[in-house]
Image 1 (tube, one colour):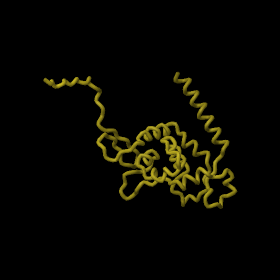
Image 2 (tube, rainbow, N blue to C red):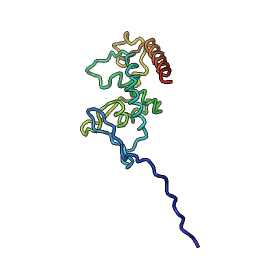
Image 3 (cartoon, helix red, strand yellow):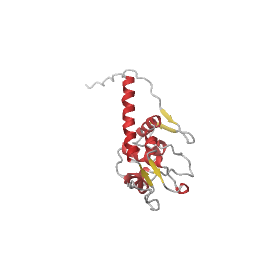
Image 4 (tube, rainbow, N blue to C red):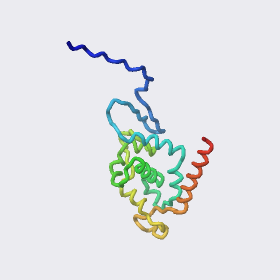
Length: 178
């Protein structure tokens, strides 16, 4: 004779919310739930972006660059380009070719503070060609300001100094917390 197995009752668990809301100024809220729909594996990026907004690492890093592009022809600021590239690296999108798809990704747009969810305005972040110009720009860009592609320069000494300052600031912070 086969007896039905009795199910063990699981212990009571803390009630979890059925959904979470992330809100950006001037954008419709992003609602995260477990119902399916449009799914992303890059949801952790929202946490990274929030930490970056508080610590301002990418914005400080962007100040180490000089932009010689004509302001009326710019779609993406240097800070936006740097932030997009760094967030891509953090999320393991090392190849610039990945940004051809990521430029349409709502989670990346949300992390970069872009307006999303507007029907007539699709979100378009920088593509691989634009990011390539940022990465492969010579140090002496001031002399090549007439060049079509090399319009963004950087200061190696400022970048090195920034990373040392951030490291030392973190060490001081750790001493206070411990």
